[in-house]
Image (cartoon, rainbow, N blue to C red; front, side, top):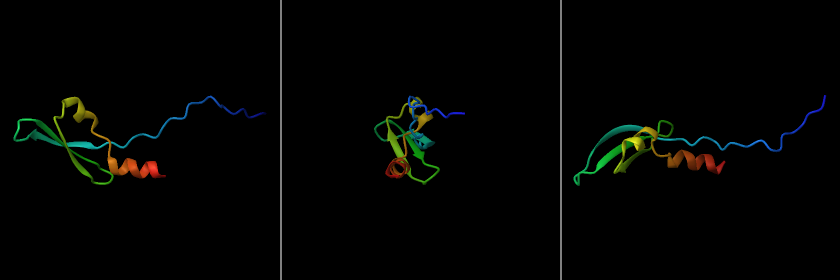
Length: 71
């Protein structure tokens, strides 16, 4: 039995760690604001002019993704 290496197999990049939606509201200027929190590191962040589709995904966690890139 021979083992054949697959040189053309695509290597997938690691999944990006994203923050979870916590709360939404309005600021003084009447802009939609949303708050997000990372469940792995506890980082809390806000986003101004946040659309509903932005809330579903959540922004990538800067702290966790920086740690993963340094590895």
